[in-house]
Image 1: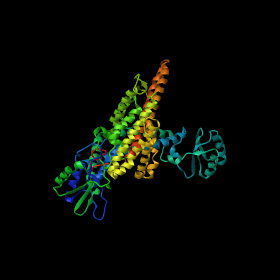
Image 2: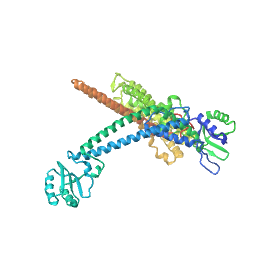
Image 3: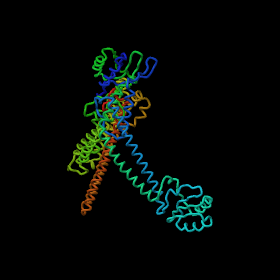
Image 4: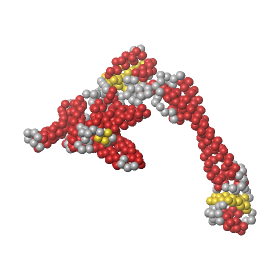
Length: 616
C-alpha cells in the first residue's frame, strides 16, 4: 500500500565555529525539515549571522521595486549575483530614479486636478470681463460673485440696490453677476441677494490669479496639456525601467531570499555559549548521505543523533507517488495530508477521480474541448499545472466514455452504443450504485489497514470490517426475500446483529447512530448518473432547438449556429464544473471518511522554498 516516505527524527549539534558551514550545506542539500526551537532554561534561540540586517533591508527594497514597477514572473533561479555591493548601488539608483518619476507624475496629476477644478469655477464668469485681481478683499468695498435663481432677478436687484446705496458697480451675464458695494452696506446687500436665491462663489480661490477668467482658463488648459504630455512620457519611462530591470530584480530577490534564509537560520535553532543545536526531520533514504556530507564540511566536529518517530510525534509528511499520480497530490494540498502511519490516498484518487469525472461528462466533443483548453491554460498559468494536468487526464477519460455512450456534442454518432444515457437510465443508476458500493468498501478495507497499524487487529475489525458485515447482512436479506438464494432471511439478520455488536464494541453508541449513513453514502453515487443525464439532456435540447432554426432562411441559420456555440459553451462550463465538484465530493465526503484522518503538516526542507519552488 502507498505510504509517505519514512522519516527520521534528527538532532545536529556542534561548535559555533562550524555552524555557518553546516547551515550552508543543509541549505544546499534541501533534506532537513527544521523544527523551530523554543527558548528554555537550557538553550536560547540563536542570533542571525553577520550581514543579515543588510540583506534584509536590501530584500525589502528589491521587493518594493518589484511591486512598484509591476514586475511579474517566476523567481529566477540563480547561483548568485555580481556582488552585494553592486546590487545595493543598482537598487539605490533605481529607487531614486523611480521615486523621482513617481513624484513628478504625482505633481502633474495634482496640477491637472487643480486646474480642472478651477476651470469649472472660472467658466461661470462667462464673458464678464473683470480682472480677477480686482476681486480681492478691500477695506471699503465688498465683492459679491455668484448665481441668482433666474436672470429676471437681476433687474429687481438693481432697482432695490438704489434704495440701499448709490455707490456700487454691477456686472452680469445671464443669472451670473459680480457686484461691488461699499462695506457698510454689506449686510443689507447680502440679505437682498439671499432673498433672490443667491449662490456665492468663493472668491478666495482666485487670490493668486491675475487677468480675466478666459485668459486664465486658456493658460490652465495649456498647462494641463503639458502635464499630460509629460505624464505620458514618464509612464513610457516606467515601462522601460520595468523591462530593463525585471530580470535583475527577480534574480536579485531570489538570491537575497536564499541568502537571508541561511543568515537567519540560527533563529530556528538552539544556542548556548559554545555550541548550536538543530532539530528536524530527514527522509530515511537521505539520512546517511546527509550525515556524511555534514561531517565532511564540518571537519568531523559535529554530532548527529537520529531516531525513528514515536506515535506522539508531529512528523512532517513527504508523499511518495509514481509520476502519473503526483498531480493528484493537489487534492491533498486542498484537504489534508495523511499522517506518517496512514495510507496515502493519492494513488487511489488518481484511479477513481478521472473515472467519475469521465462518466459524468462522457462526451467526445466536450472531452476534446477540455483537453485543448486545459493544455492551453497549463502553458499560461504554470502555478496551477497540477490542477490542469488532472483536468487533462479527466477530459481524456471523458472522451473514452463518449465512445462508450456514442455521444459527441450531444449527438449520437454511434447507432447502437454500449450504453445510451438518454434511455438506459435504470442501467446507469444500478452501475453508479455498484461503483459506490465497491468504492466505499475499498475505503473500509483501507481503514482496516490503518486502524490495525494504529490501534490493533480487534479494533480494526470492529470499527471497519463491521460495516462490510452490515452490508453482507442487508444483501443476504434482500436476496433471501426475493427467493434468489436458498437461505432463510434470518441468516442475513444474523449478520446484521453481528455487525451492530461489532460497531458497539468498536465505536460505541456513535456507531449505531451512524448505521443509516451507509445507505445514504452508497446512494450518493447516483449523482454520477444524474450529472451525466442532466448534461446530455441539455445538449439534446440545444441541438434540437438549433435544428429548428436550420429549416429557415439565412438569418435563422445564423441564429441556429450561434445557439449551438453559446449553448454548448454554457453546457461545457456547467458540465466541467459539476463533474469536478461532485467527483471531488464523492472522494472527500464519502470515500475519505471511511479511512482517512489526516492532519499532518507538509514536509518542507530547509532551502527548498527559496529556490524557485513552492513546496516539497
